[in-house]
Length: 139
Image 1 (tube, helix red, strand yellow):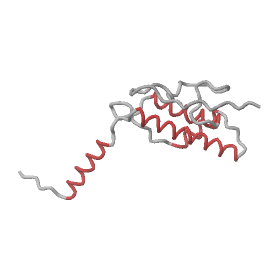
Image 2 (image 1 turned 60 degrees about the vertical axis):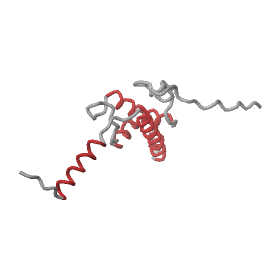
Image 3 (image 1 turned 180 degrees about the vertical axis):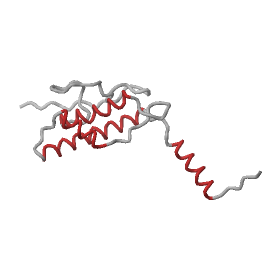
Image 4 (image 1 turned 90 degrees about the horizontal axis):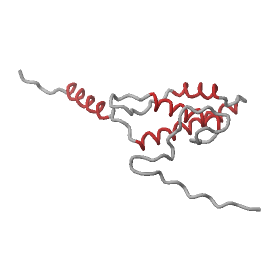
């Protein structure tokens, strides 16, 4: 029996290749970029809460995170997201929402930390570059 390619068959083949190619495990840099975006969303949500005269509490910020329904990056070979990365993503949003800072340092006053967010940590390609400190102003 000879198979004759059809437009439907070619479309299915192309779609399969696209789906399999799009499920690659996220790189360190892609995860960092995603955490930065989520953190910025947290700060934006804080502003929305404040406009409604609502305190950006941990509970209010968690509700905001749940409303976003992110398509999280894959970090496992099974093309899924580990619980550790899910926790870091939620933490980035909630902490930023509560503090008004993008990617705040772990354990800011009044915030219960789940785990440190890897911002500024050493990547597989070497240590992260830090910005030089700004000059101090004296009066």
